[in-house]
Length: 445
Image (cartoon, rainbow, N blue to C red; front, side, top):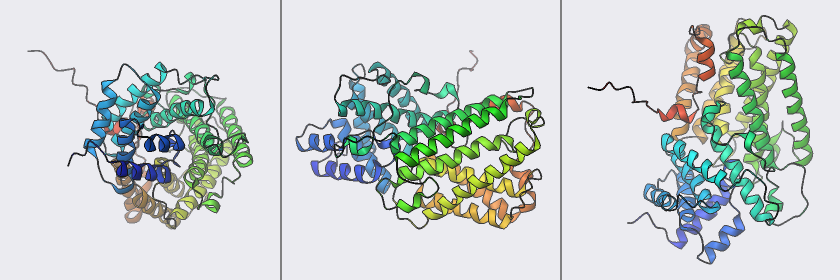
């Protein structure tokens, strides 16, 4: 059977599945449902978009790979590579998601660069106030969706960015009620906009972490920088709870909502941002500031940082535990990353000689097992394979040899620690998993 084409019925099933299960995920919220359904009814849906919607829905919801279907969608895009359009770019974003989901990370990364070129060629990073609401909002969402994909690869390293926030002059996405025409009453901040704002804060924290790794002298203003970011997080919390109508610390209260994946991403990202920020002050932690900086930080600041890490990682662990009782089919990829990071931090806080919280190792191990259960329940794609393997390794070591967990998890750094930590690609970076090889050093005969 030729799988490079689809019937109208299969396409309709793909559209239904996409908007029911995938569209609530922030990185998939760049299609306008009414427009897509109308185009399908009138046989006007762009073939590459029909193919990519169907293929992505199948691979994410049933692990059914449609390699011929996605290859056909990609070939259609390549045929008109010199004439980018919004629709072709939407198709390309879905092709990239498919390639990521099926473990083709190097191809996905190269296609992401192409998508960024198309976006800037169409000047999607600028507003077009003369356009209608749907056209304007679609442009915004396509552009911001690119930044989510960008985060899968760059993980705080500017050289891997394709769409840096510094070149974006677009507004944040509006609410779904505005986008689907059911309301004209705009809120200050939409759920999707909140996800984007938080991702920007997290990128800033990651860049600060990498910059600190290169420091060879004390940095007196570090605590001030951290407090400014903390104030941004507090302000963002207030905006979210006022505009979006839910409490960041209690997203499970609305777990039956269609938009629960966005609520969850907001909550877990907000807590993870605090962990990423305050782990800078944890001596011995891999992402902590260099010792030459920490030695000049007042003890009460470091103790406050430990308490903040404990408070927020505990909230993440509670969120993860709550997921075991939900039958949600698809969750944001970022939840798997947070499960991994929460396990690392929880175990560290329970075993570090520099931390005096008196945490029980048995409780830490139970939280770690919960994280593994969540990761296995919701994330089975190649993009989380290495992360899950290392997560299980951490838990196994904590189970079998908890006394030596500190030395085994956090070995002595290399001599070039600063450069190594600055350039280090996290285990969840898809660039790292792509295994690009520089073969240009072969000697000539």
